[in-house]
Length: 152
Image 1 (cartoon, one colour):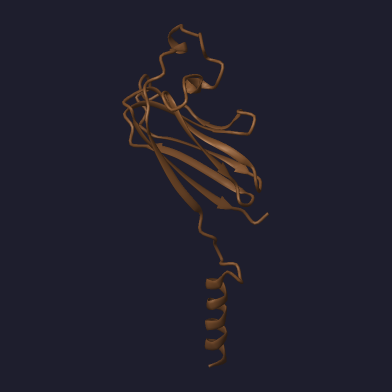
Image 2 (image 1 turned 120 degrees about the vertical axis):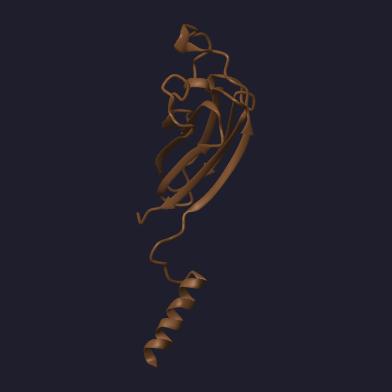
């Protein structure tokens, strides 16, 4: 009887957030975009305009779309894209615009599957930008993200 009472109290405390659960659920989200292909094809001899990684050198909300994320704790951010046809790229950019995570599968030439995934370890309150760009594909794409907090 005493054990049942202790289990019930512990379960109630976990539910109220007073005790940590054994495995915290990850934060998850997504965003979608309709993007035009990036017209600068450096791979085929057109290097003009490639100051940013890949097709991020194009115009925001035309060739690429982004969403900011602020880490609530130390943890791992995983970003993937789906629902596209053609060649898309995916990036996680730090506050300075440097790619700390990237996925640049070549779906067109290498016939890779239509998927991109990257990840980056983040520190508490670190702000990053998740960006997807249309290198050479149909306009529709969905980006999914998941953040799993770590113990430290």
